[in-house]
Image (cartoon, rainbow, N blue to C red; front, top):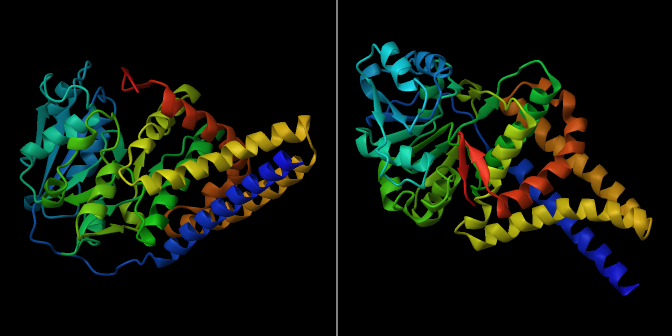
Length: 379
């Protein structure tokens, strides 16, 4: 009975820890406050958009960025070509009519293993702005986006994370991705709300160039294909006196396409998972490992319940029901703040597929290679 009791204790501890984690996110969401002020700042802004083979998405992206209701002489748009093999550059150059829009290409020899980070880093070298905003070439922006992000900047803040949302495609697969992705954004927002910034998305972040320089940018993670967002945010939080904020404005929501296939989704999540063990904060890594163990523990409880003792099935049922309850409360609060509450329609179905995908993506992200932008990236 000793091994069995030990397993019960471990699984129950992981359950309590995960519920505590969700409670903190819920508490953090409650701390986020919207502002009704329009912030006028003296700093010039550089919007950097790295791209690779985005000829179909660039026209819509450019249209949104040049239509911002922000003074045109206060910001520039820099498109950074990261070794495109299609006609993206030609398409873009034909569309550009504004003086504040430019296109540059990353030399092949410039940080060749850093992938997206090399494009962002190269763009920052050419940026005139004291403030950097990064977004992606497959994103769409409302005309109030830039002003909404700037409204959350003050002299004590160096990093503002903004919301990102998948575009509805009218099928179950895209709707499942929409709510799952919203969950990641909501989690990041809640953790920033309790001053524990952990995750964000490079499709919508703003930061001070001097803070980027102070933490030496991406110099310590150029070997990773990802991490141009949250690893930078974590360093600024840990190594500077600046604040990190989240912009809880629907006007600031950046929209992007969901993955078209399960394979694309798998590769994307594997890429995101691949950077977790490279966080500088080892205590944070330990907390994320505990969350992964909670999910892995649910799978183990199912196997043990079928082949060893039905008591594990009882614990699995309890864990799953509490997981659903706590995650529903978090998602409902976050959706009311940032998104349309209709994203909740597939919540229960998402809860079922959530478990195996996190376990598989987590393990694959640690040990496997992945494909990104038609490149095979070694782990």
